[in-house]
Image 1 (cartoon, rainbow, N blue to C red):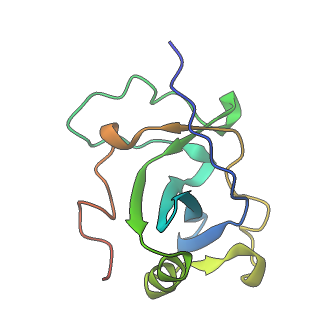
Image 2 (cartoon, one colour; image 1 turned 135 degrees about the vertical axis):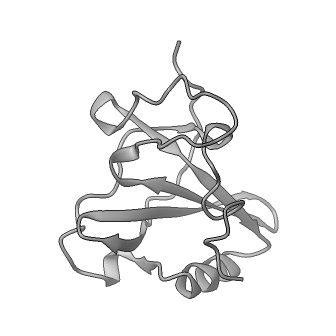
Amino acid sequence: MNPKEIKIDSKVWWVKPIEMLCHNWALIEENSKNKFTIYFFHDRGTTKGGGKLSNPFKHLRQESGYIAIIDSLTFKSKRECEIALKRNDYELLSKLPGPWVGEQPEGIFFDARKYEQGIYSNVGYWKN
């Protein structure tokens, strides 16, 4: 069983260095007029679980061609997304040189949000 693919056109990566060799990643995608979603990812496209449902796709990661969307937040404008990401210590990958350059997840995006804790949308790591 393969997960359902989610189409994300954006290639403008945002990165948040967490600790040595650990980062969170984000893309901003326009969904419809006046709606923009920030999609969040772990390094290598992995899932960590912790949600209420058991994750049948926990084994999928970048090495197998898949990237798990682990959380998301929706805003009214792209500018609101950008301001919120910066407030939460994300920076455009193109403007933040470091060892993470070239390490952004690559592959087919799939929705793993219902299997994750929702680190930003539910757990409380998001600064409003």
